[in-house]
Length: 452
Image: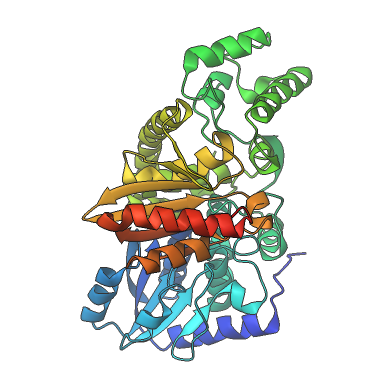
C-alpha cells in the first residue's frame, strides 16, 4: 500500500489555489534560495514544470533583496514562483504587476489577499520542524501531477539540509519519507551518517559532526583509530559489530566532552537512506545534501539544480566542488576552534573570511565548538553592507530565543532587513551600522533569554 500525505484542509485548499493559478500560464519564472533546501525546492519544481510541459526560467539567488525584486519587475513576467523565500518580503511582492505564488517556510510577516502564499506557519504547522521549502514545493508538485512523487528523494534531501531531521522526522516530513519508501524510491538503513570510503576519510572529512582535534586532520584521525585498535583503512561497512560499538562510543564521548547537545549527537548515527533511482545509484540522501550544499556555497547552484534533475556530468562536477567545499569549510572551522571568536554579553561573533560559507560555519560552530548558552553570529562584508548569519540551538529557543524577531528588529532599527526562523536567521545592514546593529542584537537577545 502506497501511503499518501494528509494535510490540514485549509493548507490543502491553499496549495490547490496555487496550482490553479500556475496552470493559467504557459511560462513561469522561478526564483529560489541557494542553500540545500532552496536548490532542492528548485529541483522539485523544475522537474514538475518539465513534466507538465510548462516553459520556465529559473534563478537561484542568495537573497530576495530590492535589486532582485526590481529586476523581476522589469522582466514583465506573468507568473513568478518564489521558493524558500518571499514570506519576509510580502509588502514588496504585492506591488509586482504579476501573479505570484510563494512556497516558503520562514516565519511570514502576514498573510496576503493579493498573492498566493503557501507557508506552513499560516496553517498551524512549524516551518522550522514540520515542513521545509522543499517539502512545501513537493506537496505542490504532487497536486500538479501524482507522478511527481519521483522527486521525493530530492525533497527529503532538502529538508535534511534544513536540519529538520533533528529530533526525529515529524508530521508531513515523515509522511513524505514513508511515501518514498512505499514507492521504492529510497530505503532506510541504520549506520554512521558521515560519508567516506574509509574510516579515516569518514572521520577526518567530517564537519557534521565536527570533532575537535580530529576533523580536518588525517594524522590525528589515524592515531585516534589506532588507539582504539581499529584499522584506519577499513571501510565503515567492514567494521565488526563490537568495533562499530566501540567507535560509536568513542565518538559520542568526544562530542559530549565538547559540550554538544542531543541534536549534535544525532549526526553521528541513525537512519541513512540509500536512493534507489538509477540517476543516483550508489548515493545516499546525505550525500545529495552535501552535494547541494557544496554547489550552493561555492557559487555553483546551477550545478546543484542539474544534479537534482539527474544530470550525470553535473554529478561529477558537484563531487569535485564538494571536495573543495569540505577543505575550505574545515579550514574555517579550525580557525574558530583555535579561538577566532568575539564574546559579548549575550552573543558570540565570528567573522568567516569567505562570505559564502558564513551560514555553514556559523551553524556548525554553534553546534560543535562554541558556548551553547549564546547564539552565534557570523558577520561578513561586501558591497558596503554587512551580511549577518545567526544560529541558535533548540534549547535556547525553548528559553525564549527568537533570532527571526531579534535580527529583524535590530536590522530595521539601523536601516537594514532581517528575518528567518527562531533558531536560524539572517540580516543585511549598512556596513557603517554594523557596530550599532550588534549592540542592539546583544541587548534584544539578553531580554529574550531573560538575562538583562
